[in-house]
Figure 1: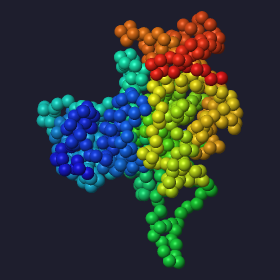
Figure 2: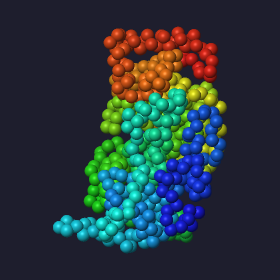
Figure 3: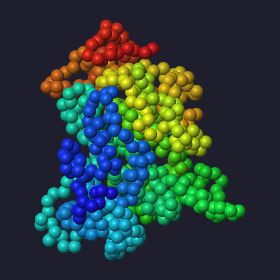
Figure 4: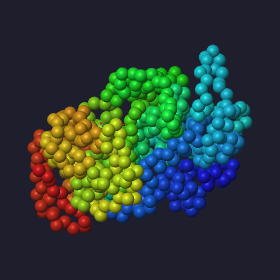
Length: 583
Ligand code: GTP
Ligand code: MG
């Protein structure tokens, strides 16, 4: 890697790199073709709110990003540091083991450093000079991990010349800060892009997620030496919000693969293995052992719960040092494929993630989603609804999954557990959409579309991109894109769906009214997305209206007013289309 030659100390802290978006030095130091370079490209393109003018630079495949991130994580160490530390001396000390590619600090019940070496061997060298602590009356269970504790030998000498360390922020902005940012924005489009920028996973947070998986992999490898622990879900699909959980799965597929390929002649060698009655029992046994390992020996893993009787058995735990709530499953290749599909949809058009983030934040602000499992709609389902809605635009902003399948070549072919999960994986082979609708219009019409969707008879289906008859009676039916007989929103109750519909109608109405009479930025009134997101504001709006009329009557009146003004405004200028209601 080019950066390895830069010198004794790390090239630049990631934080410093991020603060110099336009700086030529930063460009000089970026390694073309690396994940970091991609991120900068994304930052530059996601900064523009224009639509229909997508970045044409080649985009990386999901698998390429995954592999690069995985390699990067394997060369990285996590160090719990004293609260006061001399950054230069610290890096000089570490670079005795080899050149450092990048580093950053963050705070989470103490100060932590994430340090990426240029070579894996440097990690081994550092491990070789590291001792197991002696804890007085307590006993330590020795474990040579990549999670270290740094102590100062002569702390009084070392603290005298300290300059403060810049820490990377790992959390999303407070409601107050968000409110200010949204109110200062120039347009609703600007608001949606601001929300995306503030809530999306940062480069540092993403690195920490891959590193956490890699550290868990080290523990699991004690039992299964060739295993991999891979992140999936919102940590990797582009729709993750700072603070979201870390979904990971234990991949045992590589074990024994090579020996099968190398056999020749009349003999075939097989491993002696234990047999169990079913795949599910095997999963439960494996997770039970790994859960036990994490609980007993996993540095920094606390609150380990083995939830083995769930439909999808899992081990849930907190990784203290990173602050992530982790869900570990096994054999979850279909979920990884769903993550790849969502990643592709998110990367195809800059409006997709901006719209999905706003809808997800809107749902959270109104308690339509929750971190506790229950009858609520999930973020995954909401993202599928956004994708479906964007497939239904004219012209479509996103292609259907069936279309992506027609673009696939032989190498893209993918069958998992008998399900055809084939679609084109090279983003550059998909033509960008000619649709130039603004985010403001899309947000308004999203609420209107689902405020009037015939949920009682129709199913949402991103494979075909059109409404289908519901095959079963669940209130909300969203077809699983790969396991097509399954409904990803089977858990959603009628009352939760109704709440979603009522809020969607109300939000469509608020945006529509505002289009006619927007408060001036100096008035300090919440407007646009801010008016929809802040729960107190939304509640006040609903309460003041509820005093006047029952909700059903009010919503009916609102829709009537939208319909009539829709007809009036159907020839509206300035590129905005009037709202039309669907029966
Ligand atoms: P957040 O964690 O809420 O940010 O979103 P997430 O997309 O990570 O959702 P979640 O943690 O609930 O699930 C992780 C991943 O599992 C999802 O991204 C999907 O790939 C998959 N998944 C979740 N729910 C379902 C479901 O009902 N059916 C299927 N097939 N896959 C699901
Ligand atoms: Mg998740």
